Image (tube, rainbow, N blue to C red; front, side, top):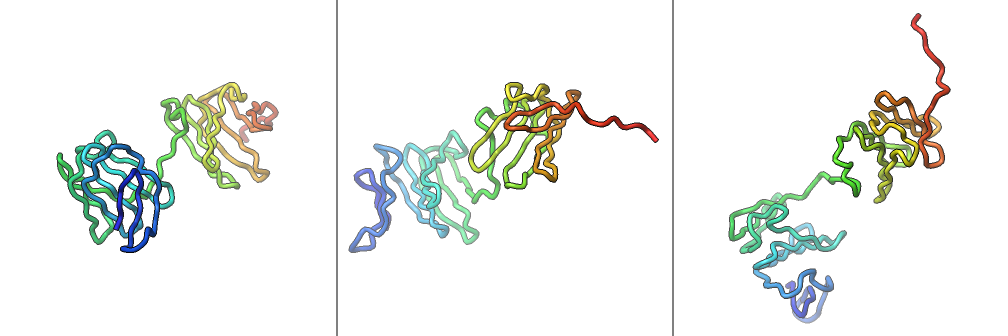
Length: 197
């Protein structure tokens, strides 16, 4: 059984502690119910702080009234055969499903601008252009923003492309074409003009 005591969360098999999740993320908490799901998550319902979920890969996260639950008083928990988690609260019933989509956003939240185009580079990183906030690069867990200070004279970037030499190109709205060179975007002015046949 799982035991929350002395500020720690541990698992007891009748004779020994077999798992230790360390300190519980909330002090002075009244626990109302606990459930270990079939996927290995430990779910802890509380009287006043909502739901705490321990993911074996990422650790603890909290769900409460501010991010989706009807109320913070968790009364009961059960898991159905499709691995959905049903949460009974003092304000009604909530159904939690495993999220299949990961939401990504840079620290500045795209400066509130729409994302216009996306491109996956050869190294697996993601490039994104925006309407008025320049260009963003997501590699691993890190975001890099390219704006005026990084040479991008026009922040209305509508397209991004990686060529066969792994060079990154950005097309802007009325501002021309830019190429990434040593961490800065440089306007491309040596393009050959085309003529109609």
